[in-house]
Image (cartoon, rainbow, N blue to C red; front, side, top):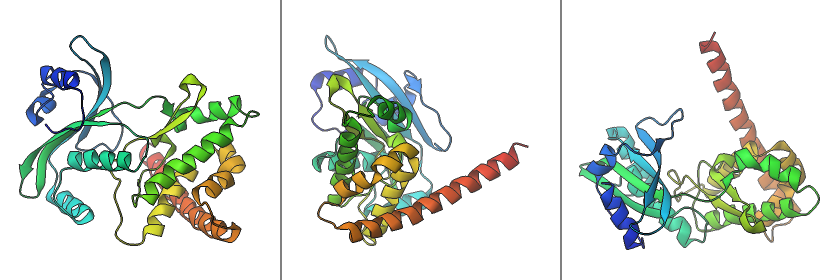
Length: 275
């Protein structure tokens, strides 16, 4: 097991649960499994771990089964060296936090070595507070129609994305489901989650940035897009004039249209298979 600056009490709690090794992580049968389509060889579990005589932590355990050779080779090509998917996400979280991006904390990870990267691997991360914009943001907008909070959160959202992109990284799954809003204490905060596919593109970075922006625009409430998208762009592109923002916006809209067409084709295929 490897990890960063994790309290010894939490390390002891993980050892007690057998979560300090690959074997123990894959044998663990506690917590609540979080199932959704498309997980494939992955398994996600929410668990609570209490430090001896200390606080209880809400954690997420991600377990990755053995990778096919083709997948391992593709990861190698993307990231420049052989690493397991758990190790990639662990290092992505560390890199995002170093860039100032508000996200979860990587508690620990482990992997089984093999010729092309790793067989099984696992990662444990902390929970972030709040709820996904996908679920909570329409209600937030309704509650704050008149007080300016929506504009403030929009600017913070743009700053969050800019921090990631300015550090040279892209998320690749930057949907509203992966940005959390925490309203505790009357001071809304945003957190970015699910950094498994984050990477630093070696070329065509503008294309990747546009893809991130398009995923976000496509998945956000239409009312927010109509009222606040231009506010978002102005904050995301400080110092860029109207012509430059318009060029970015047009590129984003072309990508949004492409995402929408793919989603419609998937829905059509799904309807066809359920008849």
